[in-house]
Length: 470
Image 1 (tube, one colour):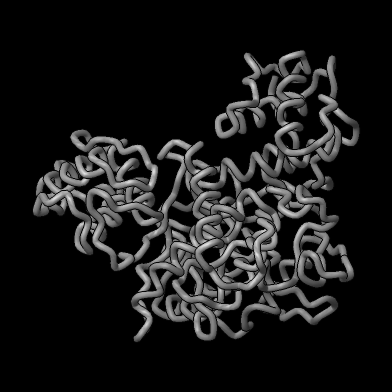
Image 2 (cartoon, rainbow, N blue to C red; image 1 turned 180 degrees about the vertical axis):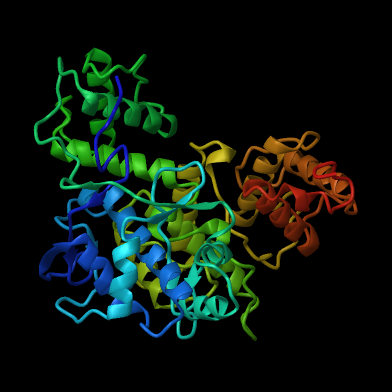
């Protein structure tokens, strides 16, 4: 049975998009406008009509991709909201209801509104984070930077590659569709046979990898059988839904939300954080000791945001800004901790334990780590804590790719197995074999991990002892 459900198993351009004129939980008006009018409005609110056409096109690709990502993943609707996107720039992109549209922007949007950015080999439109690049910085497209690149003669695609990486494509001529809410309208239950059942069976089997208590559905074929009912009931039990064994609207969107979380955790792109593109941040004067800790907090918040819809994602920039403090407070409220916006020992331990609880269910290939600065601590046998846990995760992935490096069992404790893996890594790359992680070894591990994880294996071969890329 082939699944062809527009807006769910294929990307389509919705006829209309519903915008919430405020923050997600803020009482505000919802307005529904045509998708094309939305793109023109956002572009006219975000960029300048006098910019070079190459910059206009690059920005329009990013704007369209961001909107389509929210619609395709049903980011808000799967969390119980009755809209597709907000106009609050802390969460989404600017939209000013009933504003005027610039002619030059309108002309380009007419041509590009059915095109979007996608990672090679993926279906989901990229959540193409962007910011102005002057007042605000972010791990995505810098709008004023795109102007400079366009003036240097780069094409829109080359501009986008500068910000989102080489492994992107521009998908064009996306089909239009009227419907964009995916729930079929009636509950799915025992005896049903249709593509919607098959889609839920595939989703539940994927979720069960991270939640082993959910039984696998053997040979999913679109028939709602007893095995499917058992998987639905266990899913409902785990996520606090009435265990009816029926996929009603609430269960449908809960499955959609958790499926999106477990499949997107590696990149977290649906939350606007592109971990593979985060630069090597340089600490500001006087802050070198706190930046690494802030980066770890920000990464932990982003992992948690994939599983708790109350916790927003943040930029991993090493700056304890308002966005990060707000996310910390949301975490504290979710975990019923004192709401201070400060990462004290209780908050830090709770955050660490919750992240470990999520990541330990995933194989190394399903985890994507950012480029974290050295925490300023020398790790060796007997060391414990989040820094050890993170280095174990880095090494676990490296060991899954390179022969001769032993896998570690990430537990936050620097034991003999971790020391062995460190020594083997040092030997492999021609580093003094001490079994100790100082700043140089930390930086090499992070560098090799990022190159292996994101496909630049030819660069790994520049280090002594490596056979890759030779």
